[in-house]
Image 1 (cartoon, helix red, strand yellow):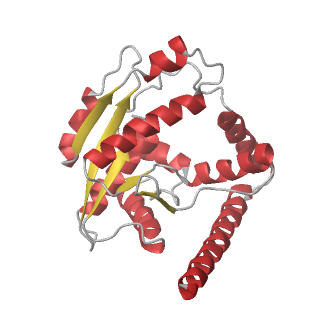
Image 2: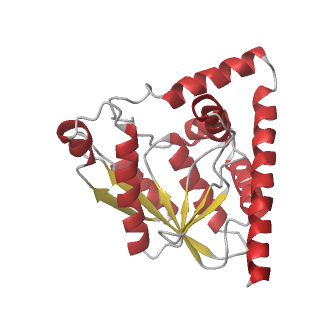
Length: 250
């Protein structure tokens, strides 16, 4: 995938769901993986020509694993003219050494999100961009059906009352395969995930299942994505109706 194609798909999502407003300050959580680095490239590129002026902040949460090194990401951020902040934590020690969690993902995610949100507020950002792509959306909906018994997926735009931060997902139209191709083409400095449970999660199982369903039923992912989009639109219409009704009563 070319940079031009990436920017086109990103702008499509941003415009369709009104993700960016004038003078927004948008935080991007940089894990060092292919998705977050692609999002960094997409928003830094969009910033140059988008009609609404906005700024971005790149943030990495250091979980405390040995060998952590983001020198290459620091250089990339300088190249893209993006301010870069690294938060050093002891999350790894708490999750694996002190608590000895048998299912560490939930606690790790909660602590990582807390550290990230605190820094987002400190940097005066009003929005946080997540690097969820098209395949993430499909897999999340499948996980919801398999493990929770209902059809759910995260919305393109979500306002969090508690933190007063709006979450946006500008890569929702970008396929994971295209992200891999873009990273290879641009030779982005991808970091290997140091987590010992990486690749052994329910999400990894569902990813393999989705790929199997696609190989056996050509077009499965396209149909699933459209179904999720329709479901999100219906849910949003219900929320808008409830808000309007509440406003009328006031």
